[in-house]
Amino acid sequence: MKNLISFIITLFILINFFYTVKIFSQEETGDSSAFRSSVWFYTQRAAPNSTIPDNAYGDAITQKNSMSPSGPYLNVTWSNIGPVSIPFDNTYCAGRITTCSFTSDNHLFIGAAEGGVWKTSLSSLNWTDISAGLTSFSSGSVAVSSLGDTIYYGSGESITGYFYTYSYLAQGIFKSINGGSNWSNYHLSSPDPVIYKLAINPADNTILLAATSLGIFRSTNAGINWSVISNTRGLAATDITYTPVNGDTAYAVGYSSNSGGIGYLMSTDAGSTFYTPNNNRLSCQGRTAISICQNYDNNIYAVTEIYPNVQVYLSTNAGNTFSTTSQANNNCGQLGFDLTIAVKPDDPSIVFLGAVLLEKSTDFGGSFTDIGGYNVHSDIHELVFKPGYPNTLVAVSDGGAFLSTDCGDSWSNINNGLPLAQIYRIGSTPRIYLFRSAGFWHRLSCGKWRSVDSAVQG
Image (cartoon, rainbow, N blue to C red):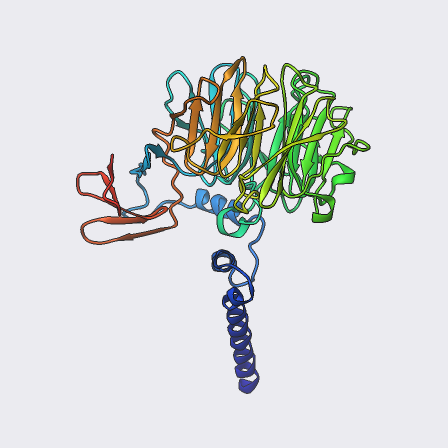
């Protein structure tokens, strides 16, 4: 019996040894160090069963909330000590923000990569964390009713290709009917898919669509119950939108069917069914995004990855057919991580493209110019116009949130008060604390933070 146990233990060690050698030798056969880092990150959290249970994070939160605080340091009130507003080039940054949504009453909501939901008024720019009660802080999409009272928060950061390194598993959709004071959690399937985009029907706010990693889902009772559109089951949909006024028509895009995606689909019955328009000439390749001009909704832009470029398409007949406009060199091979497009609400000739860079076209997508420069952090995840103000838009990126009120001619930083840096390790000495957050920071006795480049901030 002892020999059998020894044999099993030895076999287990050998299997793990050869598995580890295989993973960490893959750079020689073409796999990047980023891939190996991803494997390491994932396996640290998957042990001992090689997988992370779908409900692991939510269960941990539930268990934590049920525990009675004990010990000298647990029954205390925690406060945030930073770092906040991290210096970067000529501006200040927060952590990565993946989604944002405006309301008609001058409020802006954001979803941080692993930082939950925050809101502010553009008149004050004082941010409020409304994440209390969530069991997932991994943000895929935020959709808000026009007055901001009902908020839908789709969890699971909507990125592809960097999944294991950066994002955590989805926990479904969270809904608040009181501006974020309380949340209810609803599930789409088991396991829950990653939410790329949520869309509220403008004519009937009880109808919602969700573009997810496992298909298009639809709710007809304000997000409580969801069903998958049958011809999209198991296929990746990366963007979805309703026409701005008439909720009968919806458009959805994703990876090509050859790559496990939905390609391009259209609905004329408020999202009950979707079909592919004949001879539409929109060739979705990698991750794809779509945007409709609000005042001229026959004009629809789409953008898809064609490495090493991005291909922009334009339809002038409500999505029945598309034509190519230009290929922008705005890729760097990471468009599964960041890709978005937004057309000016009152002028279809002006369109903004967000990928690694923030770019703008004033000739129907014929050519694009970098407008972000050193004022907007790179890696743009979403671009949103403020309702009723066609020159005001927000860009959210790896560096936080940035606001323009002159149609992209100039940008202001609105990250003050957003402590969203993704901190993975913490260490201490008898004198200082040391954090890692895109570099090393340490906290001085005066309460300020100093980075390795000696930039001090409060």
